[in-house]
Length: 229
Image 1 (tube, rainbow, N blue to C red):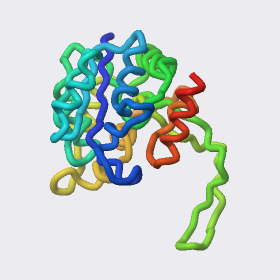
Image 2: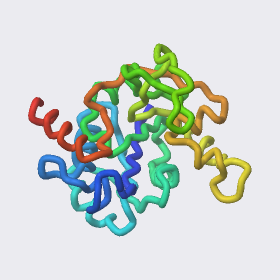
Image 3: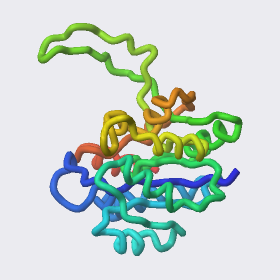
Image 4: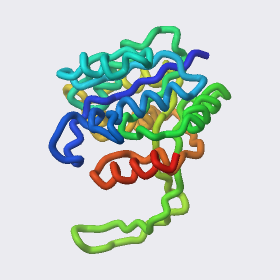
Protein backbone atom coordinates (compact mmCIF):
# COMPACT_ATOMS: atom_id res chain seq x y z
CA UNK A 1 0.00 0.00 0.00
CA UNK A 2 1.40 3.36 -1.04
CA UNK A 3 1.65 5.93 1.77
CA UNK A 4 1.05 9.61 1.08
CA UNK A 5 1.50 12.43 3.59
CA UNK A 6 -0.39 15.71 3.89
CA UNK A 7 1.26 18.58 5.77
CA UNK A 8 -1.15 21.43 6.61
CA UNK A 9 1.20 24.38 7.07
CA UNK A 10 -0.86 27.49 6.36
CA UNK A 11 -1.51 28.56 9.97
CA UNK A 12 -0.29 31.95 11.22
CA UNK A 13 0.91 30.77 14.64
CA UNK A 14 -0.21 33.82 16.61
CA UNK A 15 0.90 32.28 19.91
CA UNK A 16 4.48 32.34 18.65
CA UNK A 17 4.26 36.12 18.35
CA UNK A 18 4.56 38.36 15.31
CA UNK A 19 6.42 37.24 12.24
CA UNK A 20 6.03 34.90 9.28
CA UNK A 21 3.62 31.99 9.10
CA UNK A 22 4.20 29.42 11.84
CA UNK A 23 5.67 26.75 9.58
CA UNK A 24 8.22 29.27 8.29
CA UNK A 25 9.53 30.27 11.74
CA UNK A 26 13.19 29.42 12.13
CA UNK A 27 14.53 26.63 14.32
CA UNK A 28 18.33 26.42 14.35
CA UNK A 29 18.43 28.48 11.17
CA UNK A 30 15.87 26.49 9.17
CA UNK A 31 12.07 26.76 8.99
CA UNK A 32 9.98 24.34 11.04
CA UNK A 33 8.50 23.11 7.75
CA UNK A 34 11.91 22.00 6.47
CA UNK A 35 12.64 20.11 9.69
CA UNK A 36 9.22 18.42 9.50
CA UNK A 37 9.54 17.31 5.87
CA UNK A 38 13.10 16.13 6.41
CA UNK A 39 11.83 13.96 9.26
CA UNK A 40 9.10 12.51 7.06
CA UNK A 41 11.60 11.67 4.34
CA UNK A 42 13.63 9.75 6.93
CA UNK A 43 10.73 7.28 7.24
CA UNK A 44 11.15 4.46 4.68
CA UNK A 45 7.42 3.99 4.08
CA UNK A 46 6.66 7.57 3.09
CA UNK A 47 5.85 8.17 -0.57
CA UNK A 48 4.33 11.35 -2.03
CA UNK A 49 4.18 14.39 0.26
CA UNK A 50 1.82 17.34 -0.27
CA UNK A 51 2.31 20.55 1.71
CA UNK A 52 -0.50 23.10 2.05
CA UNK A 53 1.39 26.39 2.52
CA UNK A 54 0.10 29.92 3.10
CA UNK A 55 -1.19 31.21 -0.24
CA UNK A 56 1.29 34.10 -0.20
CA UNK A 57 4.23 31.79 0.51
CA UNK A 58 3.71 28.93 -1.93
CA UNK A 59 6.71 29.77 -4.10
CA UNK A 60 8.91 30.29 -1.04
CA UNK A 61 7.84 26.89 0.34
CA UNK A 62 8.61 25.25 -3.00
CA UNK A 63 12.10 26.74 -2.98
CA UNK A 64 12.72 25.69 0.63
CA UNK A 65 11.61 22.12 -0.08
CA UNK A 66 13.19 21.70 -3.50
CA UNK A 67 15.48 18.93 -2.24
CA UNK A 68 12.69 16.81 -0.73
CA UNK A 69 10.44 15.92 -3.69
CA UNK A 70 7.19 17.43 -2.43
CA UNK A 71 4.13 19.06 -3.97
CA UNK A 72 3.18 22.45 -2.53
CA UNK A 73 -0.36 23.82 -2.86
CA UNK A 74 -2.07 26.88 -1.38
CA UNK A 75 -3.71 26.13 1.96
CA UNK A 76 -6.97 27.41 3.36
CA UNK A 77 -8.09 29.71 6.13
CA UNK A 78 -8.72 26.77 8.50
CA UNK A 79 -6.60 23.71 9.16
CA UNK A 80 -9.19 21.23 7.92
CA UNK A 81 -9.59 23.18 4.70
CA UNK A 82 -5.84 22.90 4.15
CA UNK A 83 -6.03 19.15 4.72
CA UNK A 84 -8.83 18.82 2.17
CA UNK A 85 -6.92 20.87 -0.41
CA UNK A 86 -3.77 18.79 0.11
CA UNK A 87 -5.76 15.56 -0.12
CA UNK A 88 -7.17 16.66 -3.48
CA UNK A 89 -3.61 17.11 -4.77
CA UNK A 90 -2.35 13.73 -3.54
CA UNK A 91 -1.73 11.15 -6.30
CA UNK A 92 -4.64 8.71 -6.55
CA UNK A 93 -2.50 5.63 -5.98
CA UNK A 94 -1.79 6.60 -2.35
CA UNK A 95 -4.00 4.12 -0.49
CA UNK A 96 -2.96 5.23 3.01
CA UNK A 97 -2.75 8.86 4.07
CA UNK A 98 -0.88 10.44 6.96
CA UNK A 99 -1.69 13.96 8.16
CA UNK A 100 1.24 15.62 9.91
CA UNK A 101 1.50 19.00 11.61
CA UNK A 102 4.52 21.00 10.49
CA UNK A 103 4.71 22.30 14.07
CA UNK A 104 5.58 18.76 15.24
CA UNK A 105 8.80 19.19 13.36
CA UNK A 106 10.98 16.80 15.39
CA UNK A 107 8.74 13.74 15.26
CA UNK A 108 10.99 10.67 14.99
CA UNK A 109 10.70 8.47 11.91
CA UNK A 110 9.91 5.56 14.23
CA UNK A 111 6.56 7.17 15.12
CA UNK A 112 5.73 7.60 11.43
CA UNK A 113 6.53 3.95 10.78
CA UNK A 114 4.47 2.78 13.78
CA UNK A 115 1.40 4.53 12.35
CA UNK A 116 1.98 2.96 8.93
CA UNK A 117 2.42 -0.52 10.43
CA UNK A 118 -0.94 -0.22 12.21
CA UNK A 119 -2.66 0.91 9.02
CA UNK A 120 -1.16 -1.93 7.00
CA UNK A 121 -2.32 -4.34 9.69
CA UNK A 122 -5.92 -3.30 8.99
CA UNK A 123 -6.68 -0.20 11.10
CA UNK A 124 -8.91 2.42 9.49
CA UNK A 125 -7.47 5.32 11.49
CA UNK A 126 -4.45 5.57 13.79
CA UNK A 127 -3.16 8.24 16.16
CA UNK A 128 0.12 8.31 18.14
CA UNK A 129 -0.48 9.14 21.80
CA UNK A 130 1.22 9.72 25.13
CA UNK A 131 -0.29 9.25 28.61
CA UNK A 132 -1.42 12.46 30.30
CA UNK A 133 0.96 13.04 33.21
CA UNK A 134 -0.46 16.24 34.69
CA UNK A 135 -3.41 16.32 37.08
CA UNK A 136 -6.41 17.61 35.12
CA UNK A 137 -9.20 19.70 36.68
CA UNK A 138 -12.61 20.51 35.26
CA UNK A 139 -13.51 24.10 36.11
CA UNK A 140 -16.47 26.46 36.00
CA UNK A 141 -15.00 29.93 35.66
CA UNK A 142 -12.27 30.03 38.30
CA UNK A 143 -13.81 27.29 40.46
CA UNK A 144 -12.71 23.65 40.32
CA UNK A 145 -15.71 21.35 39.96
CA UNK A 146 -13.97 18.00 39.49
CA UNK A 147 -10.66 16.21 39.16
CA UNK A 148 -10.61 14.18 35.96
CA UNK A 149 -9.37 10.58 36.05
CA UNK A 150 -6.29 10.83 33.85
CA UNK A 151 -5.69 7.08 33.62
CA UNK A 152 -7.88 6.85 30.51
CA UNK A 153 -6.66 10.13 28.96
CA UNK A 154 -4.11 10.39 26.19
CA UNK A 155 -2.43 13.36 24.52
CA UNK A 156 -2.64 12.96 20.74
CA UNK A 157 0.20 13.70 18.32
CA UNK A 158 0.79 13.45 14.59
CA UNK A 159 1.17 11.99 12.05
CA UNK A 160 -2.35 10.65 12.19
CA UNK A 161 -2.95 7.90 9.67
CA UNK A 162 -6.04 6.89 7.70
CA UNK A 163 -7.25 4.67 4.95
CA UNK A 164 -7.75 7.15 2.15
CA UNK A 165 -11.44 6.39 1.69
CA UNK A 166 -12.07 6.96 5.41
CA UNK A 167 -10.32 10.34 5.45
CA UNK A 168 -12.08 11.40 2.26
CA UNK A 169 -15.46 10.46 3.72
CA UNK A 170 -14.73 12.49 6.85
CA UNK A 171 -13.93 15.58 4.80
CA UNK A 172 -16.85 15.08 2.44
CA UNK A 173 -19.40 15.37 5.28
CA UNK A 174 -19.00 18.82 6.84
CA UNK A 175 -22.17 18.64 8.93
CA UNK A 176 -25.71 20.03 8.76
CA UNK A 177 -25.04 23.78 9.08
CA UNK A 178 -24.30 26.08 6.13
CA UNK A 179 -20.67 26.11 5.00
CA UNK A 180 -18.46 23.81 7.02
CA UNK A 181 -20.93 23.27 9.85
CA UNK A 182 -20.44 22.76 13.58
CA UNK A 183 -18.83 19.31 13.34
CA UNK A 184 -16.12 20.64 11.05
CA UNK A 185 -15.53 23.66 13.26
CA UNK A 186 -15.45 21.68 16.50
CA UNK A 187 -12.93 19.06 15.35
CA UNK A 188 -9.37 19.92 16.32
CA UNK A 189 -7.84 17.06 14.35
CA UNK A 190 -8.71 14.71 11.52
CA UNK A 191 -9.25 11.79 13.87
CA UNK A 192 -12.08 13.80 15.43
CA UNK A 193 -13.80 14.02 12.06
CA UNK A 194 -13.41 10.27 11.60
CA UNK A 195 -14.74 9.60 15.11
CA UNK A 196 -17.81 11.69 14.26
CA UNK A 197 -18.56 9.24 11.44
CA UNK A 198 -18.58 6.41 13.97
CA UNK A 199 -15.43 4.85 12.55
CA UNK A 200 -12.85 3.25 14.89
CA UNK A 201 -9.60 5.03 15.71
CA UNK A 202 -6.74 3.08 17.31
CA UNK A 203 -3.59 4.29 19.04
CA UNK A 204 0.14 3.62 18.87
CA UNK A 205 2.83 4.96 21.21
CA UNK A 206 3.96 8.50 20.45
CA UNK A 207 7.20 10.23 21.38
CA UNK A 208 8.20 13.00 23.78
CA UNK A 209 10.10 14.55 20.88
CA UNK A 210 6.94 14.86 18.80
CA UNK A 211 5.71 17.86 20.81
CA UNK A 212 4.01 20.74 19.04
CA UNK A 213 5.89 24.02 18.69
CA UNK A 214 3.24 26.52 19.76
CA UNK A 215 4.91 29.06 22.08
CA UNK A 216 8.35 30.71 22.15
CA UNK A 217 9.31 28.33 24.97
CA UNK A 218 8.69 25.39 22.65
CA UNK A 219 11.28 26.75 20.23
CA UNK A 220 13.85 26.74 23.02
CA UNK A 221 12.95 23.15 23.86
CA UNK A 222 13.20 22.15 20.19
CA UNK A 223 16.65 23.70 19.96
CA UNK A 224 17.71 21.67 23.01
CA UNK A 225 16.42 18.46 21.38
CA UNK A 226 18.36 19.20 18.21
CA UNK A 227 21.53 19.81 20.18
CA UNK A 228 21.05 16.52 22.04
CA UNK A 229 20.62 14.68 18.75
